[in-house]
Image (cartoon, rainbow, N blue to C red; front, side):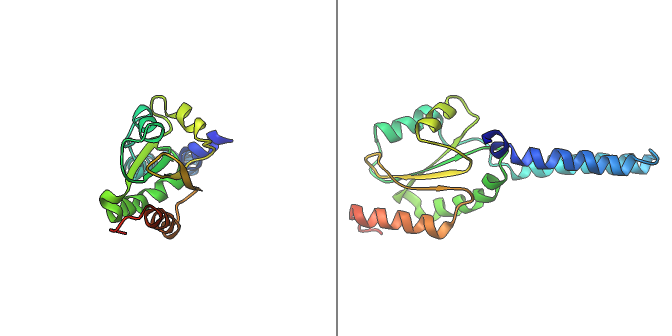
Amino acid sequence: MQIFNQFSFLIFVIPAVIFGVALLLRDRRTPTRLAVAALLVVLVGVSYAWLRPGAGSGDAEQVQVLLLEPVVDRPVFLEIYSNYCVGCLRSEPIVDQLEEEWGDRVEVVRLNIHEGNARSLAYRLDFRYTPTFILFSPEGDEVWRHVGVIDADAARAAVDRLVVALGDPGA
């Protein structure tokens, strides 16, 4: 089931493009219809390249060091995502905004499930579906988890509770 979640964008788009091209070309293959079909394929490719989150901000080894041997004196907000996940695409601008709001108070780390050893680390963190968001205390203890498109208000509240509990005067 995880394969469908992590590749949801492709699972929805590829059949839609095939169906659209088949409809365009079902009666006649005129140059105009061929051009429209080619444009449809190009537009889907461009939209995917424009929307996808891209590479993570940390590889599995760096994330493991942050969580298992804490080297930062602030909370760590971990996003486990896939470049091919529709929910991850929807969450990207929200996480960008949260990262900007939090500044240096919270270490935001993004882990692409398809990079390097990320999958083995994610499974040790009890990862099930993308996107998964986990908030860790500076000591590496998990204090909050959310699976699915992120709710910015819930993430803010979890971080605020943790920062207050840590006694951060900048909260």
